[in-house]
Image 1 (cartoon, helix red, strand yellow):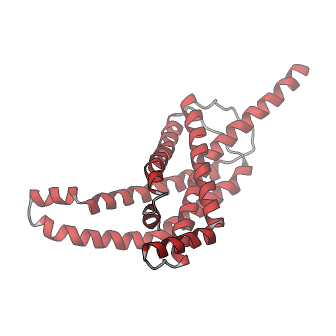
Image 2 (cartoon, one colour):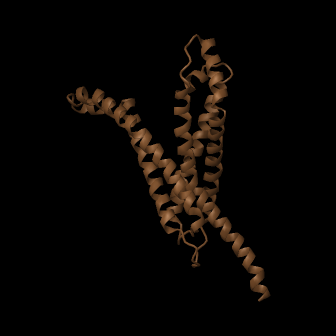
Image 3 (cartoon, helix red, strand yellow):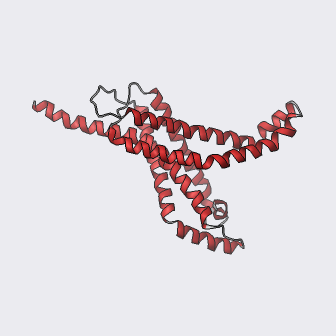
Length: 235
């Protein structure tokens, strides 16, 4: 449906800026994970964030499980199509495999699944670490603070956008029906539109939660410190 929409004269000029914004937003998550791994000490996770972490685990888990059968089938078809004739040609065949777009798509898909699984493991660590017991903390680094805010803003807008898409999906489908009529094509079923929106919305919500938990944890810590400072001076 995205391809059909991009054929509309009013939508073509939006494609390149939209892709640029999307790629910039995607970069924020690896930057956040890297900054989190380099941060000294631990980030406190209160028990109030455990339901949020569990919800994100559930969303990402459903996204991975729902997309895994189709991903495995597509990967198997692509591999069967390129590896049998190519390997018999020696080094030339290996180069053809490496340059084949299907190989790049397969590698990208595998890395995407590994990224989702890594995020699930991080959320499980947050879920298990959550505690309300007082402990000494180390302030997070400036790179982590910056990348956390960037990831929360970027993926927050992404999640809000797809939540809005889901709410407005009947009107979006009506637009595609009219567009298909103008292009002389048959409109795809409504279920296909939902199959595009719902997994993306689940994935976006799940990926947002990890930086959001870190952001809220640090903001709550600063609020508690600001509240405790006047009490300590009065004492």
